[in-house]
Length: 273
Ligand SMILES: C[S@@+](CC[C@H](N)C(=O)[O-])C[C@H]1O[C@@H](n2cnc3c(N)ncnc32)[C@H](O)[C@@H]1O
Image (cartoon, rainbow, N blue to C red; front, side):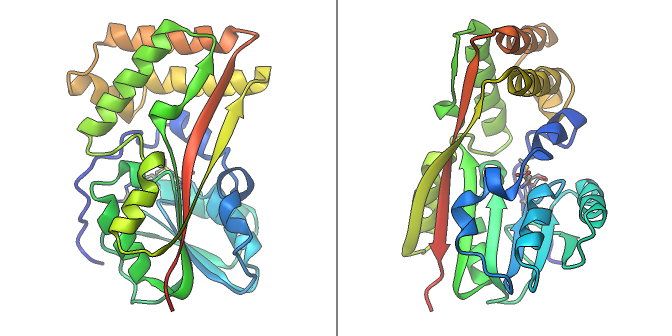
């Protein structure tokens, strides 16, 4: 396996409060822009697959093909393997890899996909070049990332402005770019793609169940996760400030009129034949 080239630190880590959000994700709610281009026989690489719920959906969508899920964190791949096994999938496998230096020959995959990954990496343009290298001519590189500064919510709970400001500071100190969604097209062009379809889509949390889930996972993540540790260890926030931000999430979640929208940028890049 090539030496790991990543210079950034993955901001969230894989605490239970983080995986609570990742395991909610499906191909339908997170990769709809790609689904029309998938064919049953395709060979797919899912980079930064985390606990693998999207990866497993992709495997079901290519029943005559194959999906490889990779992540730089070996621990979370155990959960991904269990998810795939629990769903009886036999056309999926998992491996450790860094998107900056993939251990696959040129032109290997029909589709190379990454969801909520490029915002966390040290060199997203290099990552996209590497994704293109392992894609077959005529195949697709598909990427979707949130854009934190474009997230919007109601009502205005002042502590949530502090949350956004703090999150952006910690993510950038870790070497990432939390406002990645708006930059994906620019990064793809810089990586040499000439056929780039750029779209956007949202997640919306408004029902009592959605508000409780979204506010609860952020309230918990702010107090106990790699993100919380880096916020304090990096001198970005005191524990008291983290408690205040966590409380702001609970306050928003309890508001019966609460509404939260997460904007994402998406790019579907075709590799020239
Ligand atoms: C926000 S999670 C997304 C997980 C999954 N794609 C999803 O949407 O549910 C980002 C994942 O990317 C992984 N990651 C971060 N940097 C990476 C890199 N350089 N190469 C491969 N994976 C990376 C992290 O370990 C983490 O599991």
